[in-house]
Every structure is written in C-alpha cells, then in structure tokens.
Length: 268
Image (cartoon, rainbow, N blue to C red; front, top):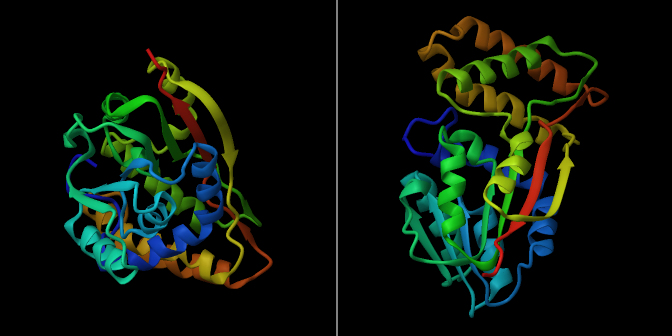
C-alpha cells in the first residue's frame, strides 16, 4: 500500500485474522507457487508479507541457496514476521519496510508473489508495471486477487451489508476490490505470457474460519464510522447478526472469488 491508512488492523491486532486467512488459502497458494516454479535457490520478492505466514514457508522452500525479500509497509507486521523467522531459525529472509512502488527496482527476481495486496493499492496497474521491471527474464509474476463475488445461503442480509460497506469504502479511497477480474487484461498489457489462470472460491468450512468475518467487520469499523459510511450502532448490529448466522453450522458462506494468475516475462 502506498499510504499508512488501511481498512483493517495491522500488527498484533490483525494477527488472528491473518492466521485464519492463511489457513484458508494455504494449500491453494502453495500449489500455485509450486506451479510457478518455486524451488531451491530461487530469489523471491513477496509483496505485502504481513505477519510472515507465507514468508517463512517460502524461505523453507528456496533453502539456504535461495533468498526471500519480504516487503510490507507496516513496521508492526514486519516485527511479528521477523520473530516468526527467528523462531524457525530462518536466515535467508530480508525484511523491507516500504511501499511497493518505492522498492529498489535494480534487484531482479525469479518470482514475485502477492496475495490480496493489489486491491489495497490505488495505483494497482502502475504497481504491476514496477513489479514487471523487477523480474528476471523468464521470471514469473504470481498474483491472487479478489473479485466482487460471494456465496451466502440462506441469505444473510447483515453479511451482505458488511460487503456493501467495504465496497463503498473502496470507492471512497479509489481502491479496486474487483481487481481480480482485471488481472488477465493487465498481464496482457505488460506483455507477460500467461501460463496459468484459475478462479477459486474458498468456502468457510468451520466456525474458526467463519470467525474471520466478524473479525474483519470489527477491524474495519473505525474507518466506516470515520468516513460516515456507518454508525457504531449499525456495526454492532451487523456483528451480532453475523455471529448468530455463523453459529449455525448448516449455513454456507464463502470468501470472495479469487483470481490466481501466473505470468512469465519473455527472454529477449
């Protein structure tokens, strides 16, 4: 992100949500990265590393001859990620506190990876152009980004209202929470060779995973109220209704649909 304000909490306040998020995406994200050529000795740039859930796994995969450059704009996030790496004895990670667009483009990478990051950046295509310049010839850009498509049965109006508030906030901040549908076009504009493209739509399978929804709403509440999109009373009502909904194990509720895409930079 190019600015410090973020719709959700960062650091220790957002750690629980990020851990659940990684639990939901772990298998499909790891499979995507392996498909993109992840392996020993690779030099990788991870954009928006957060609290380091994927960072440490990536460091294990590339081994001592590889290296991970993990970028996040939040110093709090990076401190948690650093501690995670230290506990696991990982020494092949460089943590960088910076906006993506300000990362030194002189370093070239075999793989550049981001998950649910571009949707929080107002100049998403310009960011992709910057990342393209940081790819080695034959290197791959791997992105996972959301689209505005959810499943919810039976209908939960409180959950739909929470999604409506999120989209209103995105428009207000000039963010694109439907960027997933645009990635194929953007990759073509960059002349990346698209070697893989897929939609996934994770279903919240249990109460722990479903608990991410009220966590998300609670973390976003201050910004919704700050910009006049909602009130404390409405947010409390939404959280209460959503908690009742997810307590019923028979109710189906999904994460937004996700575009997974791998594009490779041509060799000159």
